[in-house]
Length: 147
Image 1: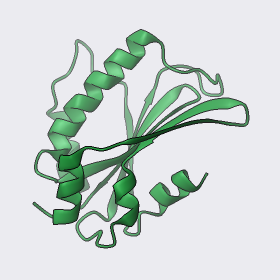
Image 2: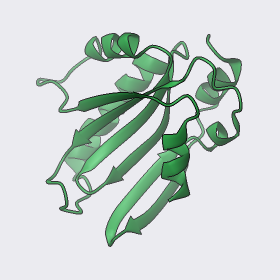
Image 3: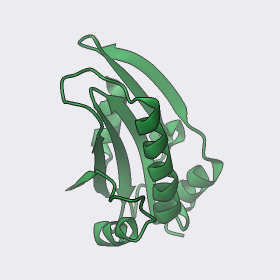
Image 4: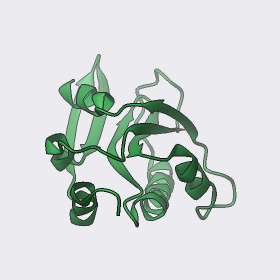
């Protein structure tokens, strides 16, 4: 395991849920609050954002039951692929305005990409887009939670 503090948070699997609005659009944020107090982020300085659009952008739509079920299934596979050995941690999940976004921190984007590619798929590949960035101080996570 890379970092005992991160591994413990993954093992505890405690999430906080916040619901609100931004410019009249519903926003649901689920996050691991314990990550906000982690001072040693060593080994988790790379940011992977995974976006699953389920409706038109600017529609303000939340997912329908079918989309919710598919995204829950994806998240279960994602957790199994990335968190089983604390390779990466899913820090937050944001649902708003026609899309769900997973905020993931890791030390090896290429390994994450490989693990995600090898996850079980449904009949069609998951409709996701992935972006990467350096974020050793987890500024994105703190920015999301400050809003």
